[in-house]
Length: 453
Image (tube, rainbow, N blue to C red; front, side, top):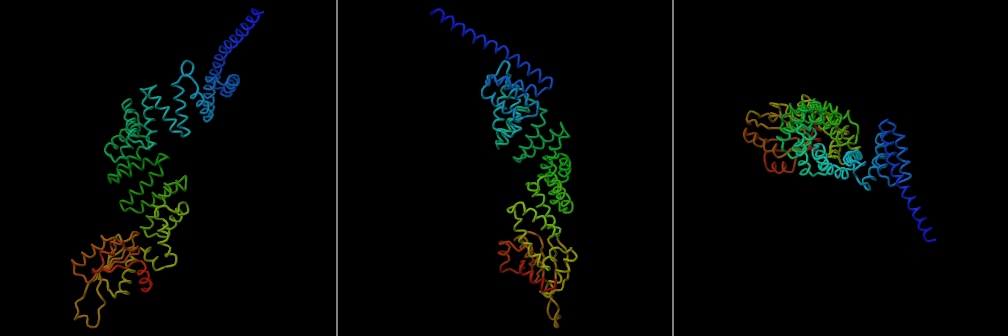
């Protein structure tokens, strides 16, 4: 009886062993079937076979790996990442499951789905598995840069270039890091190398333009930014930079053209780039005395972002234009018309007859004498210096000091400064108890109305 039971147990054990051996022999054959289907481009059939294997044995991680590969071939990247994650957490690499190939695939998927921490872990492993591959070190540098670890990212970019001096992306990335750290000499060196190796990688010209702009070489900057506009990702930013170069050179019409193009090529009305393009466009319109157009841009910015820079203050400042024709005329008239307005104000309010009147960047300057009285021959004629400002910014103390110096030098009776934007506190302090009169916005409005402007 005992011998019969022992024989029965042995038979059962042999049966189980035979089953598992047969299963282990069959599984690789089925995996080979998945491989064959993938080579033939039959991704759906490969997925079906892999799922059938997994249904019988959920812990067959080799089948999970090839299901992930089938999903990749079928452009189902998210499903592929789910399978690869499962493999990464459970499988033992080696033999039929190649670790290098697997990590190359999963690292790219982590990058695609914006999972930088997981991607970083994979690329760090790849630098050990494939230490001569320059790109692995480049991607580690890029991921550290995204974490604002410039110290680490710079080291990995440099290692990438030690392994491959023609790694264009590493030259570009290193150049950008140098630029951000204000090392413009090394930045230009790296960007120049990247451009020499790949002149059609137009994004590199954007940072070359930034370097030239920092060095105030606006001509070279404009040329570089023009090339950068050929890259769709950098086009809007390059147009904004071109506009800022023209602004720096006081070429307002050209700046308006560039900022207008930057606004037109916008793909997102609420993006930071579009808001800045409109802001700078409004600043140009303001300088060009096209206040209505400037207000239009400020209103569009305000509709998207109430707290964007000083837009709310600008709209408040110019709100009076809607109801005050005199101030609007003062701010928006042409240079010739503005001169006549200022002469009219000088005569009406101060009885000054203009001896000379000239247009300036800030508005105009008038040198005048008091209106002659009946006994004018017995009185020495006194000269008065009047400056009319219509810049957007309040007049600072530097302007006051220049006027005071001119009054003293030429022995003028007094200086007068009119400003539609008011004066800084330091300007008012410098003018106190000195021979200069400051006329701010509110007083200017009354004078303009009284003069019939």
